[in-house]
Each structure stands twice: as structure tokens, then as C-alpha cells.
Amino acid sequence: MSPRRGAPSRRVVERCAGVLGELALVRVGRRGYEIVAAGVFLTATHCRRSERALAREALAAVREPRRVLVGGLGVGHTLRAVLDDARVHEVVVVEIEPKVLEWAQAYLPAVARALADPRVRVTVGDLAAYLRDAAPASYDAILVDTDNGPGWLVREANARLYGPDGLVSAWDALAPGGAAAYWSAAPSETLPRDMARAGFEVRTVTVPWRDGNTPDVIYIGLKGHGPEAPEADAG
Image 1 (cartoon, one colour):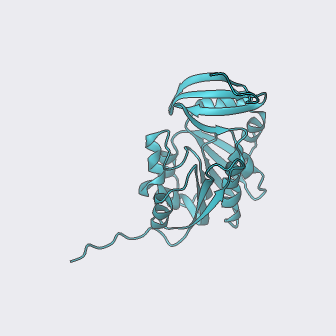
Image 2 (cartoon, rainbow, N blue to C red):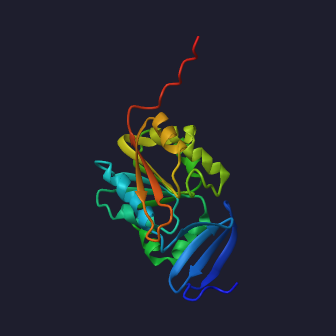
Image 3 (cartoon, rainbow, N blue to C red):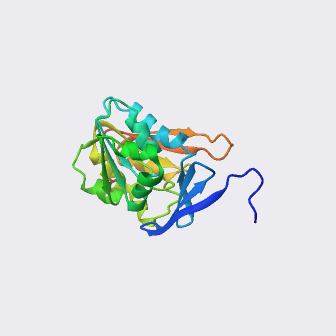
């Protein structure tokens, strides 16, 4: 099928085998890029409103967001929004795909500059494992955008991030008064409930698309009283 008239051209710039499956960098039009993993759209340079809102809303909820963890680099929208906040002294980016970091350096100059910021440190690895091993109370904000949300996983192992163990790991890694924010391409019934059970005070932010598609959703959890104790068996 030929592209519809007026649609931007699309061309695969690079393709490789990644942790998430086949990974592709797609050139869209003259200056745009998309990242596709296992045939599933992940992120694009022209889609930035909700990724930037992930950082903006979470940092606004924290009095002193000096140390921030960004889970998933993508095309750098969230990282760049974090660096726009002068209160931030250090940013740790955890990215599972080394090729995404290479592409940022080779094709995305603004992201390359962000990664070169002296406040930024990059770790290649799995975010769930990183959070599990993180020192207690080591971050003021944790921003999670490693997938399309709990209901649309590219990598099944990422379900751990949104489940009880992963949420408790995030709660433990936050300093008092900190916030964890989770990006999702669609509303989730289970995530806000499980966040509350892990100890978070949860609020939801919707970010509508200009074309009327289903809004992206950001779930923000403030570090509150702590995980709920399991209910005692009756009888």
C-alpha cells in the first residue's frame, strides 16, 4: 500500500536484536524519529507532551527534588524536562537497551547534549532489578517510562515494575516526601490500587492528545505512611 498523500515518509535507519526483541530506529519525515521494539511503537521525537508532563508533574509534587531516577531514556523527552528544573542536582538514567543510548548520540543532538550534562549518570540495565538493589531513601523522584504502561507490555518481565514487589521497591528507594510517577498509554484499574497498597498517596493526571485519541495517563505516588499490612485471616 502506498502512503497516503501528505503523510510523512518513513524509513528504517537501523535495526538490531535488542533485549526487548527486534529494535528499530525509524526516520519520519525530514527530522523525526521513532523507536519500535518487537513491532510495537514505543516513542517518537514528535510525541513529547505526556513524557515531559511525567517529569513536570512529579517534580512539582516534591519540595526539593535534588536526586532523580529516570527509568527509560527513549528519545530523551523526560530527561530533558528533568534537567530544566534547576532544583535537580543529579539524574540517574536506567536504560535497558544499549542501542538506544548509541542512537541518542548519533541521531538526536539535543538528547546527546542532555546526556553530557554533568548532572547525568547513565546505567545500562533492568529498572526493576536496579530499584530492588537501590539504597533506601536514595531518590527524591522516580520516573518510570520503560514500556507502554502496565496494560501494554513490550517486555513481559516489566510487569514486575507495576506489581507489588516493584512498587514496594520504588517506595523504599524514595526519600520521605518523594514521588514516583508511572507513564501509561491507557488508564489502569490495578496500578493506582496497587500503588496505594504499597504505601503511596496516589493521584492521576491525564494528558490528552490533540487528535482526540485516548489520553495518556500519569500515576503519581507520594511517599506516605508505608505499605499496607496484609489482612488477617478471619476465624
